[in-house]
Structure formats: C-alpha cells, structure tokens
Amino acid sequence: MKQKKELLHRPKLLKYAILGMIVFLGLICLYNCSFIAPGLPRARDPFAFEDGSDPVTGISHYRRGDMDLEDQELSLEVPKSIPVCDTRYSELIPCLDRNLIYQLRLRLNLTVMEHYERHCPPPQRRYNCLIPPPVGYKIPIRWPASRDQVWKANIPHTHLAQEKSDQNWMVVDGDKIKFPGGGTHFHYGADKYIAAIAGMLKFPGEKLSNGGNIRNVLDVGCGVASFGAYLLSHDIIAMSLAPNDVHENQIQFALERGIPSALGVLGTKRLPYPSRSFELAHCSRCRIDWLQRDGILLLELDRLLRPGGYFVYSSPEAYAHDAENRRIWNAMYDLLRRMCWRVVSRRDQTVIWAKPLSNSCYMKRTPGTQPPLCVSGDEPDEAWNVPMKACITPYSPKVHKEKGTGLLPWPKRLTAPPPRLEEIGVTLEEFHKDTSVWHDRVIDYWKQMKSVSQKNSFRNVMDMNSNLGGFAAALKDKDIWVMNIAPVNMLSRMKIIYDRGLIGTVHDWCESFSTYPRTYDLLHAWMILSETEDRGCSIEDLLIEMDRMLRPEGLVIIRDKPHIINSVRKFLTALKWDGWSSEVEPRTDALSLNEEKVLIARKKLWKEKFTI
Image 1 (cartoon, rainbow, N blue to C red):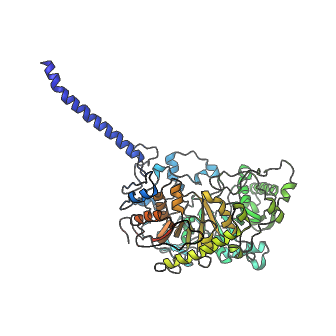
Image 2: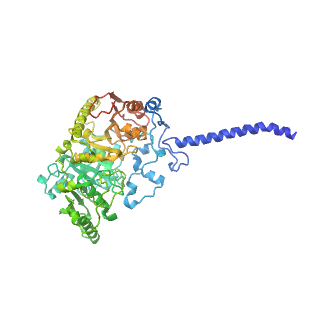
Image 3: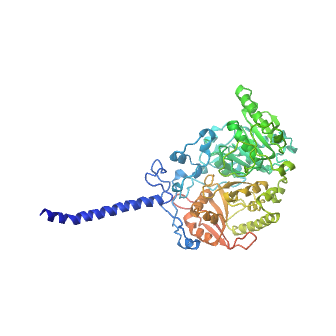
C-alpha cells in the first residue's frame, strides 16, 4: 500500500521539478536580458540610481547587431518613439554629472579640481532618452539682442543675479534676465575694460585687436562671458572657459546669449586645444592657485600661448599690500621669471605678462633651473585626455629662428595657408581646394534650407568634423560663430583651425560632449556618423546626443554615405525631427568620397507629452 502511494506521488514530484526548473531558467534569462539591455540600470546594479528611479518615462531598447551595413539598414529596429527623460534631467550633461560621481563612488582629488573634469557614464548608464526643455521654454532671443537679454524660463536660475548684484553680471527683469556688460573686475562695463587693456599695451587707438594681430583669446574663469561678448566687436574671438562649479549655469547663460564659450577647467588634464593657439589669455579677478604643483597651471597657459603671447591677470595678489598677498605675488613673479616671461605693463589692479618670442632665454638659464624644458619626445599638440606636464614647451627650430608664428593679421589669415600645414602633411593646393569646395557646399546648404531659415536663424553653430575649417571659413560673412570639432583620430588638424583665426576643440564622439542641452542652432555632421560606426560606437547614441545639444527649431545637416542617411531618416519621427526635412544627392566635388547624400532636418519645439 505504501509503495502504491509513492508511485502515485512520483508524477506530481516530477511535475513540480519540471515547473521549478522552468521558473529557474526563466529567472536566469530575465537576469541576463536585464544585463544586456542598454540604457537602464538593472536591479542591484552598482551603477543604479540611489533612489531606485530611472531617467526615462518609458522603455525602448535598440542596438545594431554585428551585421553587414546593408543588412543593418534593412533589419534595423526603429522605435516608434524614444522615451523622454524625467524633467529633472532638463539640464543634464552626462560627462559632467555630479550625481554620477557620487553614484560611482569615484575617489577624486577635490583640491586639483578632478571633480570638475569629465567622467562619462559606463555603457549601461547611458541616457537613451530625449532631454525635455524646462517648463515655459521659449525659442531663444535672436542675436544681437541676445547679447544683452535672455528668457528667464529657458534658464530658470537667478542665484547669480543675487550673488553678483553689486558687480553688474546680470539683472532679473520680469520674464527676462538682462546682462549690463559688467563683471567682477569691470563693474562699469567690459568695453571700457578692453580699451584700458589696449592702452596698457600701447596699441594704436586703444584697439585690442592691434591691427588684426590679436585674434584668438582664452578667457579663463569667464563668468557669463561678457568680456568675450564685447571682444566680438573688435574682431576678436574668445574661447570663454569656466567649470560647471557653484556658479554652475554661467556657461549656459553665455551660450544662451550667443557668445562663444565652453565648459572646462584647469585641473589635472590639458585643455583640449593644441599648442600655440591663443595670442592672449585673460583671468579677471583671478582666484586660481597658479603656484600649485610646481606651477603646472601656468605651464599649461605657456603651452597654449603663441610666441610673444600675453597673459592679462587681475587679482588681489597683483595690488594688495598685506603680507600673504605679497608673498603669493613674489612667488608668482619669481616662477614666471624662470619661465622667461616678462612684465609688459602694470596698472592699478592689473598686470600683463608676455611670453618669449624664441628659445633664447631658455638656453641662457642656469642648468637645473625649474621648471625644466619638456623632453623632445613630448607632443605639445596632444590634447585629449592627456595629463598636464610641469615643463616648458620649447619652440621648434623654425619658430625659434623666425621669432613668431608667421601668421597674417585677421582677416587675411582665414584664407591664407597656415605655416603648420606641412606638419600635418597637407599641401597648399589641398588647402585651397578644401576652402573652395566648402564655399560651394555652404551655398548649396543654404539654398536647401531657404524655406525654413531666416537671416538670424543661426547663431551658435557646431561643425562636428571640421577637418581644415573650410565649413566655418565659408560662413565668414554671416553673423554666427562656429565651434569646430576635431574628432580624436584627426586631432592634429585642430591647430589649423586656430591658425585660421577660428576656435574649436578636440572630442571623441563615442562620448557625450561637454555642453548644456539646447545650446546650438545648427549642427553640421560630415561623415561623422559613419566614422563613429566604423569605430564600433552607436549611431543611435550619437543621434540622441545631437538632439540634446540642438535647440528646438534648430537644424541638423548630415552629409554621409547613403546607407547612413537611409538609417537616420527612419529615426526622424522618433527624434521629433520630422517637422521639416530635405534630402538630396549633392553634386560630386574634390572632397566627395564615393556616394554621398545630404539630409537636413529640423527639430520640433515639443513638450514632454506632446509636440507643438
């Protein structure tokens, strides 16, 4: 009887065992699927959000497999929509996200500003969602009116107006924030301050451009970039630089105003610009500790300044008479003397130094003098994710002999072949051909966009693959500025950008760019999507990043291989770029690479739940 009961129970036990096995396998499958699904942190993931929330309001995962390009184009799963990030991420900068630093528990040295440098999310933490605009967002005020006022709803932060109320940085006026043109060191206006600097340098007519010989300026710790804004009328373009620090929206205000500017910090890594890029560096009411780490920050400025370049410095150390400030001033003066810099002028609260024109002073230094000269193997133009070096970058024999850069004054230098062309293996003929081709291409672009663009539609423009700067040079007669980007595999060409009197930076498009959302009116992407794909990175991620940078009603120009254009076209609706688009097969020219197509699309102004 007992044996019979056991026989009756065996099928039930077998049934439960099979059912348990199915549940176990299902849980394993679910776990693995959550691990490989991109964009969303899985449960108990060490990179998951501390409050358990997710950055998106919906779920949509898509990636290309390891297939041939043609197969990818045919089988690419295109989502009907891309999820929208939560509104608290409306100002997200993925690689400058303080929350990410806390969540990853990164051990950073705060005293050397490592927490203000780039720290990008790992693949499983990328935000595969569209960044929403803030509540009440309006199409930005157009240039030149935007220099002096912006919509408060677009950057709803007024703490700087309160904190700097005595310095004329900015004033809240109803639904606008206005910029009187003041600064910490120039309460009565940047224009008068600029004229005073020119007077200290004894430039003719107190014009800081000095006949076009001062063109590229680096403004460190720029605030809301009023100094750079007022330089523009002098035909001087400044790279206005500030970190995403306690004044966290200063660069956002600058870009909203239409002023060339970028997020960055003098920390542990070289700034992403090549050597000998700027005629003048400026630090107003400067609180930077230039003496730290054997003067490494001043040595970084030395790398970036051209022969004979100026450093305009205003700080209590330059004029205050208490013991501590005098000690700092004496130490800084001694360091710069050993670097062979000389004081050109000193007045009131400002001192101006000049970098030497040649290596002569370096060769006369006593052996063992600090800081040392950099070793011959150091490449001063390497500027992406490279640690700063506490050494002086000497000039090449050619620059030493000529005692200068050989650059023509602005605007002649824009179209004249720069002397450093030979360093990157580009001939004069290739340079002129590039300039000519981009002149014609830009004319064609503007014809293609004629129905949806007006005279002042564009102010902030980005060329995502700038090559020799031909695209930006072709826009010289338009009232815009261009952020030229040299991808990491072409970083040596950034020196040509600066030698033409333009500005830009080096970047890796497999990562997010260091700018606020909604900061560019026009993005130009020439072959950059196919190059990104060739490197094994995600085109979809790059398209979402482009959307983050692009202002509502802004346009993208994508010039690439036909299969890339066909793939991008399928994403227009999901990206909300389907308000207007135009696709053409451009004429063949000297820069054409096999077949190409041009797709131009316009981003809609939309809210989180619907488009308008």
